[in-house]
Image 1 (cartoon, rainbow over the protein chains, first blue to last red):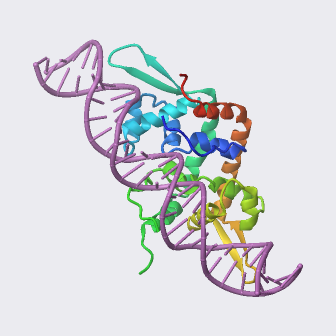
Image 2: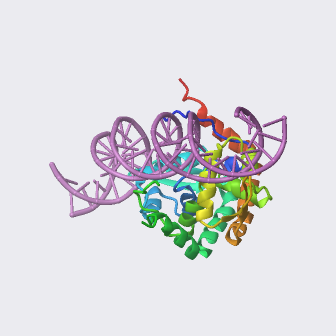
Image 3: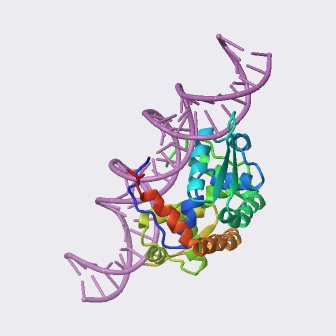
Length: 122
Length: 122
DNA sequence: AAGTACAGGGATAAATTTATCCGTATTGAA
DNA sequence: TTCAATACGGATAAATTTATCCCTGTACTT
């Protein structure tokens, strides 16, 4: 495991939430799971830009943080289903609002993001 | 400047919002600015865990993304004030909810975060 | 016997983000 | 003249996060 060297900030609510949801795919995973997409393979199909490996890592972190839990069916081939815990459910309204805000402002956001790729005028 | 090598995802609202608010101190900065703490020095006093340098970098990014803007007074010693743009204001309700959620669940969150620091049982 | 579906994770490289150190500039006060 | 206050950013090191590559295992199908 990776051994952390810098202290984790946990002063205020904003520090705490950052620790559990600021991962590249965490809000996406929570969103899809909340929509009933529960199996790892299905999640990966819905987030094709992410590798399966990274999704597993982030799912494990969400599980460690108790935002999701999983049910492992004892069968072959394997079958696993993720679901939101009560804590996970409680954050969904906010994540949905975040997604909505991004959609509502997508034109603006795409514009400012594109500027980052452009080299400074020569 | 740093030249990005991997593509930026911008498919959905969740991708977009991640790009503009998922920085270590961005939600904190937006919060304090929304509370009327507008000068760089004051912001730094409110976020002592962050170095001044990092705050400047993140403030510049927020400015590039047009969530904040600044007024530079033409005087000596320098005086600068940041304020939220309309876009920045529009996201504050959600950031406040995030902070509230973190506060409401701080006990749980601190517990799971602490587990990360503990080495696996020998 | 070989291929497919399914889920998982070790090892390591690469990319990105943060941290640290230090220097610039101006005016007024001690 | 030297120091404090104020803000800004270059250069580089360190830390952290993501990306890549590849291997394990079981049961069913062809």
